Image 1 (cartoon, rainbow, N blue to C red):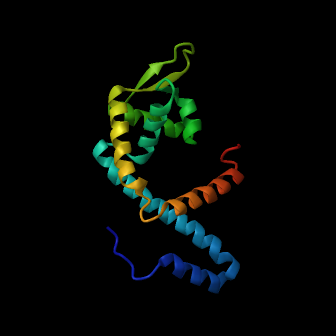
Image 2: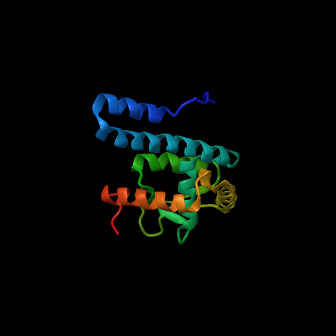
Image 3: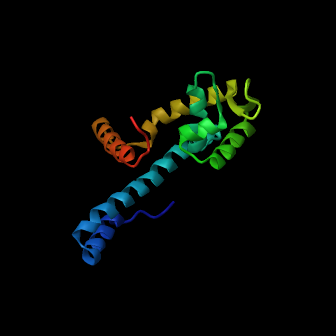
Length: 168
């Protein structure tokens, strides 16, 4: 574990940014750096909670996508679109879930060229248990309160929409 600092390094970076590049450049740098550091903290918390289930957060997301799908199966290409991942990233995710007995590769019933990822009954059990554990730690968002989380989601949703992440 890294040593705890006696100061906020992002605030110090913002101070340096203002000094070297002007007042207007500091808030964007501080915002991006804060989001990136928060991502690291949250991912570490989530992965720690998922480790007893032999999952990482990306594997958990893929498993939950299948858990919530109508039939428990999706083509790998569709998984990539919904997870917003390149196809080359989906294959190792599914492979890791197959190795753990949580997912099976099955042939598509009408398209021989397509392979489906299908959640197993063991996969459903693990998905349920892992979700209970993540819910218990509020998905690693402590100490944020409900209103803060809602504001954060709304703010980032606007950013993602305007970046072309989705269209509604």
